[in-house]
Image 1 (tube, rainbow, N blue to C red):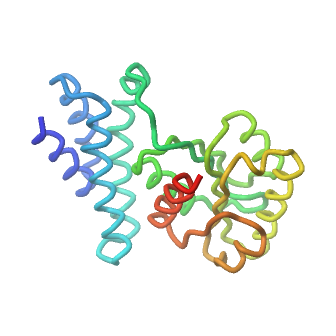
Image 2 (spheres, rainbow, N blue to C red):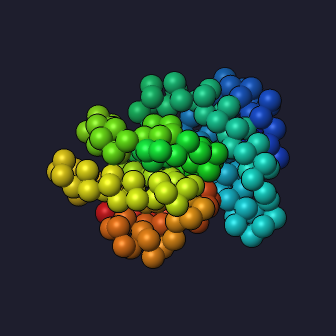
Length: 213
């Protein structure tokens, strides 16, 4: 069974998206738990991808192929995970803020976070502050991730934090922000809990924020 899990990890690293779903099913049929597939197969594979991306040895197209390979396997094991009561690392709510339609970076963050063991709820792009508030009330995430690619929409991140404060739910979540024009200094200025420069860093930051409590 260890060999099967190593093969699943390798398939994720190589971006073999057409194979990972069947490999996950074969592992389950062979008696492997969904939890083992996630924590000993998929997550180690995505962790390797994350490290390679950070050091410049893998690039966005390759990372996206790996992420899609991981998601294909996740689609197979999720029903079994629910049945078995497997606990994810935490819940992350994502959205590109109001007025901004860019979503490639945000989508990659979602993939990397899911590969790191998080349950993801993606609100899409052009998300209004009140929509973030409603989603926090509905889904009770641990982390709210906001993305902006335009300097003109960065201010909406501050508006969203203010809306969460006014709704009385700001203290229930950790907030991380990112996007090409976003900086750590801006995150500090608007009262975000964290900043991530790229998708791999975002997954690490989400884990860090949850660990910090």
